[in-house]
Length: 76
Image: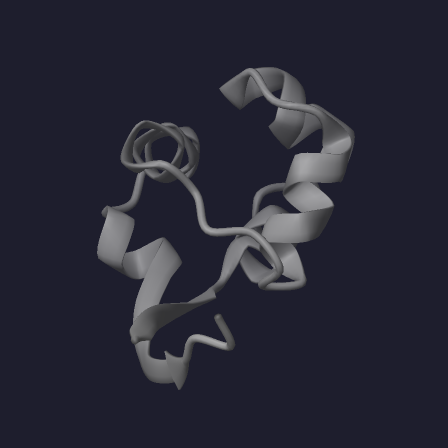
């Protein structure tokens, strides 16, 4: 089975918004800093609600934050 992979521009968007810290973004969207770290490292797929909160924080669309990158074989 294959699962979709997402690329994201969270780090770039944080930098472009007055060098917002991971902790500041986490507080604004209601998650931990560790969640933002995992998202930026592409080790965690966000829920739709979280993706929308992040996009809204930066005043961009979800597609401007997250891009479909292809598929990866599921190891299970």
